[in-house]
Image 1 (cartoon, rainbow over the protein chains, first blue to last red):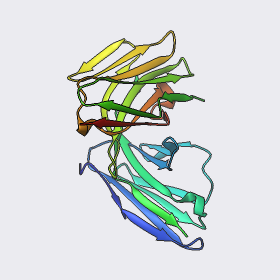
Image 2: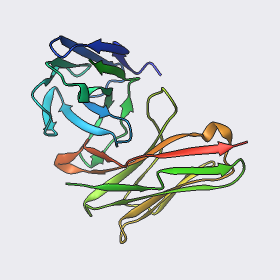
Image 3: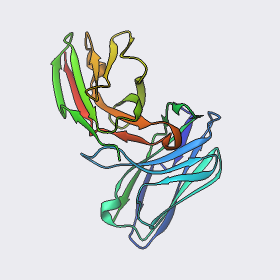
Image 4: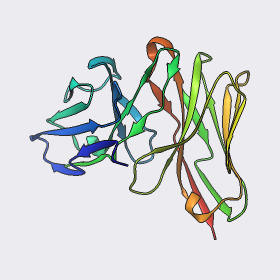
Length: 115
Length: 114
């Protein structure tokens, strides 16, 4: 349960605030992901990083800004969010397998509320 | 892009019964199909996965079957127990340059009544 950690676990912010979510993986993986989980919606992939390089941006609004300084850490910087951005934000990590996708391990998530 | 449909959205069974959840996918290039279990307030956890080179995989009370021709795969849980109650998500992924991109189904809320 401690392979992928996320902080903070809960965050309440106003629409004009700037905050950051942090994810850290201790599994030796080299791919990291941000997902958004809203009520009654499937998990939505936001960003993918392979070897610190962003390989996927799933049409995410620019008010979400990811940063991956190394293969173990991933950040999601938030600014001028909207109430509809309230959701559970999940981080995940995996190894890279050129022949296919490897298992993704999820963090506990950050429950974000935008007022 | 890939689209994954999952049914049913809710499933209620009696303890000891079997439960089956089905998913269909749209992209025939998808080759990796994991199933995740998410208990209330917890992270999604992988329970079983299957790759396109096999048709069935079992792990104790859990099995997954894959029909590549029809582009659907199913999760089978036998002898259900109350602790199986959770939300189950299927997903599909294409390998190669799109590796890592999982497309999830909408989820199934499974309730096992004692």
